[in-house]
Image (cartoon, rainbow, N blue to C red; front, side, top):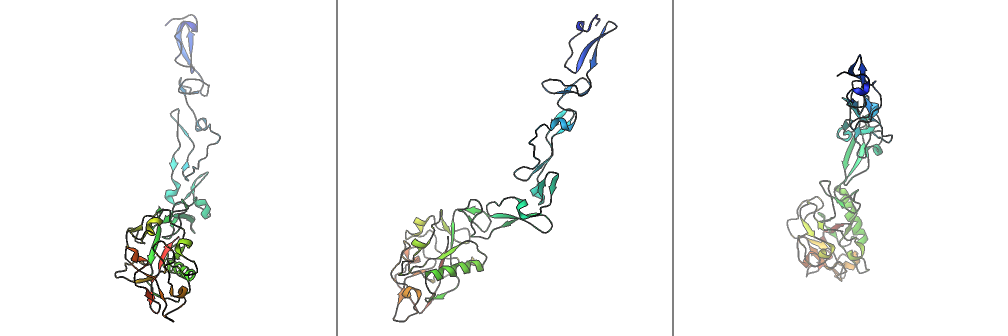
Length: 320
């Protein structure tokens, strides 16, 4: 196309080209690379006549608050410039390799706090070689989140509480409800269970499960993580159980009926006899209300025939 001045020539495609008229012939001049432009797709000329988003990676790194480490510990490289377009930086999941996110990339931990906050039934520790490890809490422990949950044997968090019947039998002179509570705690700890445990025992001094227990926010279940004894505190104290308490602290089934010291009525209050508040062993013919392990009617805690205080029986232990 012939011309006298550049204005006689077609308009350029974008701000990175300029119309020229040289020797009466229309042409185009290219803007220098780095010249600012305002094309819808770009902000800078590439020196070849196109308005692009970037020439260098620094052109894409415009967010002063950019942090390469996310809340979940992933490391994200800064945005890159590829063929004139800004593309997100590569993301590396540091936790998948047992490492932590640093400003320079994934690196070893120095202390357990570096590995992030605990979650559900796991806390996170830093081992001797700088690797983060998830460590499960024992069954029966309180969940780390939510705080009122219970950790199962599979390290999941549920709203239930556990119950077991002891594999060991005890004389009636075990010394009172508080002593029985301590015994339940020691038995649970001895097999690696977490949490706080109390005995289903009552005495004439007013110490009862109804008064001592912290009711479960959900159900009561056996340590086998399968069978639910009662779906709530109300159901537990209704006189009828959904499943008998027939698994001991070792998760072994109790195959035959065994007497259990309780002194406790179905509603969790004192049932009237407790071998002299668990102090007498048969002197003056005292007796105690006992339950039968594995039963689901009211005899689970208050059998019709009292227990003989010269005998031995088991205990029910409930997680709090």
